[in-house]
Length: 236
Image 1 (cartoon, rainbow, N blue to C red):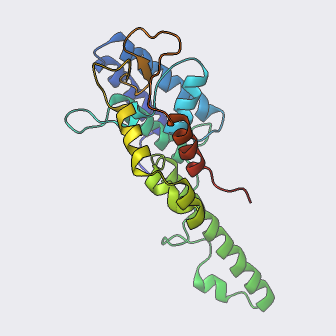
Image 2: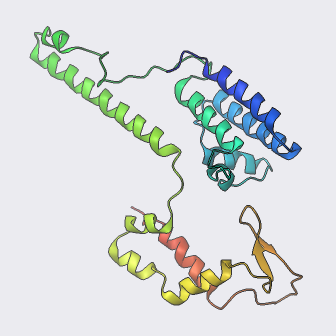
Image 3: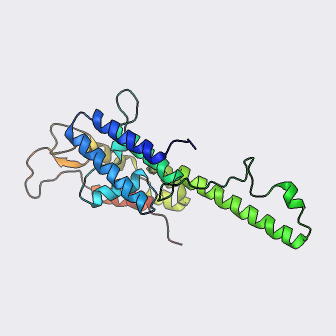
């Protein structure tokens, strides 16, 4: 881990990003993100894009996950992503009080118990128990590292999620060509349509809509329900 204080680094980054922000709206959103991350860390929670977006939305501040996953035109991270990535580093490397977290790694040169020390245990029963404890700690550490790696991954799309279900379930819930075409038509932008999507991909009305106006082809509700079921794993 770097010798620099992670909390000091994220504070410096926040001030720089805020000073570089071109609009007051961006400055305010950076402040909202920074405050949400700071509160989450103080409360002992793990910081991630999904959790922070949920926290902001629940407090009445609207922002989508896409704003973090999108990149600038030159391929660099957005200021929102830079800030939350640095807070993720703080969450992973420091405690609530800001002290560095201990990181047990039995595969490193610094081990909990060396082979020489292990051989000094004359009692075979005790040696066996110690070996079990070391194995359990190593397994838990591997699980922790895996969770940290998974935590910031984007949500699964349908092609990733469907293989998680059994063959019979996926065959019953798979969309046919007509249903896929219907969805493509629904999300396609057209000046002649009464609906469209804003920059956050939220559905909006683009023209005045009267009561009982038909806004999609028949069967849209059934298709949406089928997609929802395809993401729902069967209960144990």
